[in-house]
Amino acid sequence: MAQPFDVCVRGAGVVGRTLALLLARDGLRVALVAEPAPAGGAGADVRAYALNSAARTLLESLRSWPDDAFATAVQAMQVLGDDGGEIDFSAALAGAPALAWIVDVPALEARLQEAVRYQPLVEVVNTPPGAALTVVCEGRASPARAQFGVEFDVTPYPQQAIAARLSCEKPHAQIARQWFAHNEILAFLPMGGAQGNAVAVVWSVPQERTAPLLALAPEKFARQLGAASHEALGALELVSERAAWPLQLARANRWVGQRDGRGWALAGDAAHTVHPLAGQGLNLGLADVTELARVLHERASWRGVGDLRLLRRYERARKADVISMGLATDGLQQLFAPSAGPLQRLRNWGMNGFDHSGPLKTWLTRQAMGLR
Image (cartoon, rainbow, N blue to C red; front, side, top):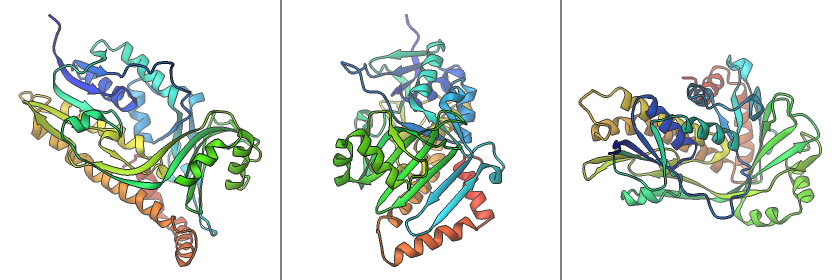
């Protein structure tokens, strides 16, 4: 007779696989529910993640950090406003080896998939089995979240994100660049290693601009990006497909509970989503599963993994960080939504003031880096 599972993890993305590996390392038997691959396959994934120091330490402990060619260290970041405002961040001034690492999504997923394959306590399944605890890591459109009766409070932004990859005339010099202008936010994230000249693009644009930009010929799309980036990296060439998705601020009203004597919990985008302008979405999700694994590891021997009091410790520990990050990213998005007027001058003045704030700037930088 097969052994029963201790935990069922629903969702085999980065957050779900990371949690499964963490729990198996503690000796728990885990069922990892993976959706069957779509017929005909999916297009190439053009996304990239900005991962902080805490996320890197976690993934390295699981032997799942990608090779240097797929994880480019960010040594500096330039944030440019729409009327002379500028903030510059430096890893050296923060006393850290990097501000973040820009990680290729397929490379990271492949490393996690390989680690799961060699972990005997994790079994990949197609349908969710019974378990003392079910953790939902299915993403923002999670069907399991609704099955547990959880309300998902969604505030849509009037923007969509467009992602793509570019080859640039000039090397990126390990600098992440971000421009706020005309209700749009454009980010160039360095890829291809320290000497690379490739960037991942995340361009948040008004909804009505999305379809026309996606329909442009590659050369015209690259020229639009060149204009939006003030030709900072010279001539640009689109070297990937383009992907787009709607942006939202969302949070589940409950993260944990019990049904029929068994516990359940939410983690990652199934529990919360934020605007991508700060690049903190996956960092929040990985912090969720780190905390959940810690709580389960430290439980008293007589408590089961589905104990509700135990799960509430996890919920309390994570909600404050998630709420504060959601407020911060939402506030920045709202601040830069108006394109002109007194607020434009005030926000750019504020950017320049913050850039010279000394200890405050250093403290906030280290917070974003996951260095408490």
